[in-house]
Length: 272
Length: 280
Image (cartoon, rainbow over all chains, first blue to last red):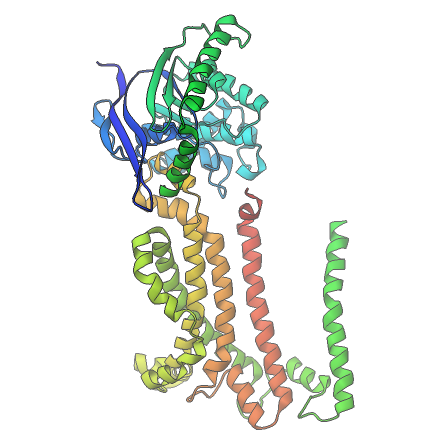
C-alpha cells in the first residue's frame, strides 16, 4: 500500500537478564500505520510499549521480525523519525534556542538558518520569549513544549512520543494535549504516542492500540470515531473510556502479570 | 544588600588567618629561637622582597617560576593523556574493561613510591638531554626540567583527571544521547555535542583536583638528585642550613600559588557550569 508509513511485522523482543534468563517484552507484534495517523499505544506499565517505540525509532533492534519505514528496514535512528521523551531530554548547557536549533545544526545548516528555524518553531509552541533561557529556568510543561518544538524543527516524517506528558500535573497535561492537537492540525504528521492514560489516548488518537502485558501483545485495535474537539463529558467518550479501562483491568487482575511486568520494566532499564 | 553581605563574608574569612598570625607572632616571641620558630617579621621580610637573592639559589620568585613550569609540564602531559582516555573508557565499556583493573593497581601507589624506579630509568636526564640543546639560556631552562620530576608530577595528576573523566562520561543521562541520536547525530557528533559538554563539569573538577595533587607532588619531585632549583628544593636546602624562615616563606608560596590556581579553576567552573548546579 502506498500510504503505509510504518509496517511492523511480527516483532518480538527478548531481554536477557544478567543471570542469563530471557524476559519476553514484545511477542509477535504486527501493526500497520498510515500517513497522518495518530496512533496511541496504551497498556499496563511494562507491556513493552516504550520498547516498541524505541524499536521504531531505531534506538533498539527487534529480536525477531522487522519494522519497515516506507518500505525500508529500520536499522538505526534517523532524523525522519523524530522522538519526544518523557523528560530530561533537553541539553541543559544549551539555551532553549540552542536546543530547538540542534536538529538543523546536525544537518549542517548554517548558524543563521538554525536560529531562524528555531525561532519559528518556538513561536509555534508559544515560547519565543524564552529563547535565551536555559531549560532549568523553565517549568516542566514549558520544557516539554521545547522538546516538541525541537522534534518538529527537524521536520520529521513521523513523530514518536514516549509518554511526553507523563511527568506533568493533570492541568498542564490537558493544556498540552490541546496544543499538540492544534500543532498537528497546522503541521500534519504521522504520530505514534505512548501513554498509560486511557483518557489521554481517547482525547488524542485516531486509533488506539491496547496492549497486554508480560509478554506485550496487541489485545485490541480501536478506531476512535468521536468527532473533534472531543468533549470529556460526552457519553461516547465515557463509554469508550470504560471499555478500555475494563480491558486493562482484566489484564492486571486476570493473570499474575503485574509483579512480573514491573520486574520486566526494571530489567528493561537495566539492560539499556 | 548583597554587596554588604559579600564584604561581610570577606571580613569573616579574614578572622582565622589574623588570629593565626597573631598567635604565631606571640609564640615566636615567647620561644625566642628563630630556628625552631622564626619571627613573623623575618618571614614577612622575605615575602615582600621576592626578587631578593637567597642562600645563593636565586630569588624566591625565580624558584617559584621554575617549580610552576615543572608542574605545568607534567600536569599538561597528564591531562592530554587522561581526558581522551577517560572519555573512551567512559563511553565504551569494552575499553573500560580492558584498562580498568590494570589502572586500578597503579592508582593507589603514591607518586613518591615511584621515585627509586624513576631515578633508575631517567637518572638526572632532563628535557635538555632529550632535545639535544647544549648551551645558552634555553639550556638552563630545559636542564631544570628533569624527566624524573615531570614523571612524578605526571603520575600524580593523571589519576584524578582520568577518574573524573570516566565518571563524568559514564553518568551522562542516556536520554540526552538518545534524543540527540534521533535528531540525526552521528557518533562523532554524540561525542562533541553531548558527551564532552555533559561531562565537562566533572572533567574540569578532576583537572582542578589533579592540579592540586601535581602541586603537592612538587616538593617530593624536587628532592630528587640533580635538582638545583625550585621552591621544593629551596625548602630542603634551607632546612640543611637551618634557615627555617626560608622554609616557611617557601611553604607559604606553595600554598598561595596552589590556592590561586585552584581559585582560577573555581571561577571558571562557576561561570561556565552554572547549568549543572541548577539542572534537576
